[in-house]
Image 1 (cartoon, helix red, strand yellow):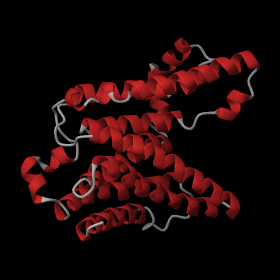
Image 2 (cartoon, rainbow, N blue to C red):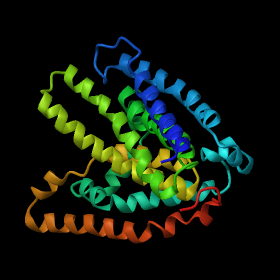
Image 3 (cartoon, rainbow, N blue to C red):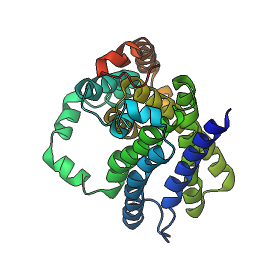
Image 4 (cartoon, helix red, strand yellow):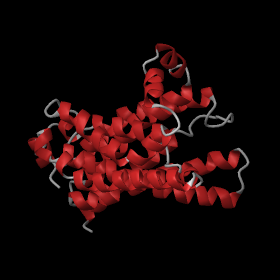
Length: 283
């Protein structure tokens, strides 16, 4: 790896450290889910969204700047925005077909739709600081820093294929700070290590998918929407599915497999760069 690329790797590492470090500048002892802690950390990542673009400027390539503006490099552009807001979400719905069917297996879809269209439901939801953190602030700030600002830096010295696998490693490592919060609430060290390893794997895998979407679409907003949806869905409840009676379990397993297979075959067609007027990043 050239010395120039080492500079870009260092920039990404520094960006990750600053993002995580900003969460711990406060003397917060109430726990990560306490409203005060959430508010303080939201302030931290807000300032990180201001600082992160300067890394592209400081470590940027002048040749790329002549080809595309800073906003375009970060995926903030109008061209192809409408399909970017629709197609990646459809693709992600297909990926989560099994969990979606499982979540609504015992609850009619009409009942869920009535809940989501109920103003009182949203009135109560938006007053929950944990919802704001999980569904708005964290998806926005993480995608902005680790994809919209980090990938343009990496793409200056590595191929798009390699960038997809390198950038998520920073994203996965950045989530290891949750080990500190787990130790604070009294979780034993072996469990913390196991949970941290699992979280690193899960966040890295999601990071691969998100980085892929960014490079293929050249847009930031679909990453935010997909991230928020994935946070809403959470991990597939495999243990719950396996505990179902055999006929039900087989049906749910079939939907899980169908979703994965359909997602695989739709992945490239629904992320064709020409659909999004994306000519800056090619994969």
